[in-house]
Length: 272
Image (cartoon, rainbow, N blue to C red):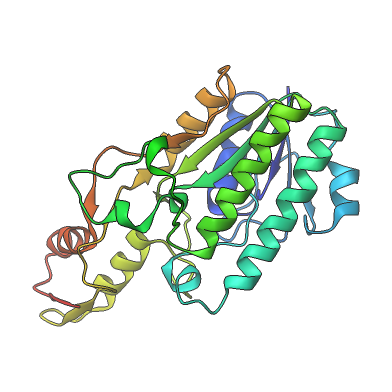
């Protein structure tokens, strides 16, 4: 079996490459960069820009049994929610998905996975930890929590249209805050678990740990190995999606921070 992983230099992509290799696949990876914290396990790795349609036409071919589209302009809250990167996030990711989906259709790719995000859900869904409302009926009226979420929703609809109009065998999953080893931990592109751990680690004992917002916003977090299990099960199924790949356990950001502070045995306090 041969697999092509787009976004293979990223956190989830690099772990997926390793997982596929352990299952006996020949794996080729494409990304702007190599993985940040370890060597890639890919048999071949192309450093290239998937916004370039010529690269996509060259590399996304029917030679592969499976294609995994995880490439996106993304990051943590410090990158996605400031508003300073909105155009780049929407333009870069949309262009990648326009190129990839068109190549998948023209090359009649046997099975392609698209990684969407829980960010497509309305902001109102994040205010009640007892009722996260991550069901399809809650997606519309659409009100994603960021431009990143709007682009993900657009691309979901594009892949679903390709399924209807061209018979593309596409599987769509919405990731819910995946974390684990070798995830970035600073410079604004880190996810909440890594950011909170960094802040607690740097805080002096008895000092303050800054939390963005009022801290009552809720999230679910999923360990990388469980995420990979979900990806592989979806790709081996007949269901196209969208499906959620995440944990049913919700936690507030304040609750997460308090948990990390307790584990650190520091007597720090929240600063909201």
